[in-house]
Image (cartoon, rainbow, N blue to C red; front, top):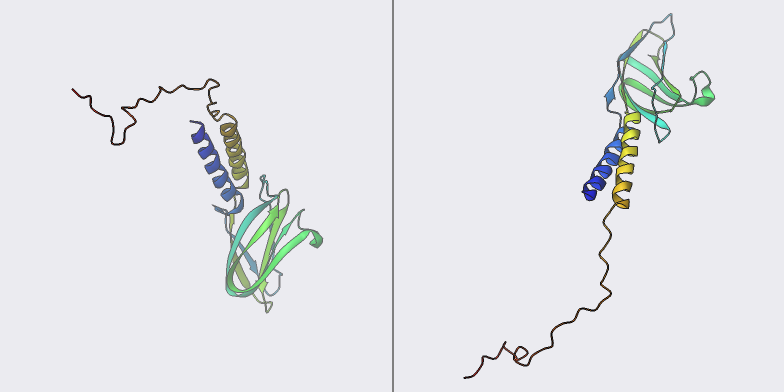
Length: 182
């Protein structure tokens, strides 16, 4: 039974670790439209949660009707201070990248035409389930530790020597016991 606890704990740690780092939860799409007379808007958001790694993975894919420049940034604060941001710049009509938003921070994306003309960029976000993953890792570690602590103790050797019956000449002969003569 205790071995099963260890196996279940190990499996929970693996699943939890995957949920912490792999973006699998789809979020609503966001379309950013810019014209030649208005600059592109910036989409600013924050993913709430807890993560033992200190950041939450956000996979961002984007498509556009024309060639654009796209910027994405993850910030330790509200993304109003460029010194707090780590970002990615891409160009073309589609692409993808991953941002790692610090816990308690935010992320921003913006896209606009290279020529200053009209453009429409649709962003698709997928996030990691960092809070659920962290909880599963914690429960898995507890189960594994409990299984190790409660494992059965190995049997101790007896302090009294075990006496074997004395050998008899009839049973020690090569080929087996000697049949009685008679």
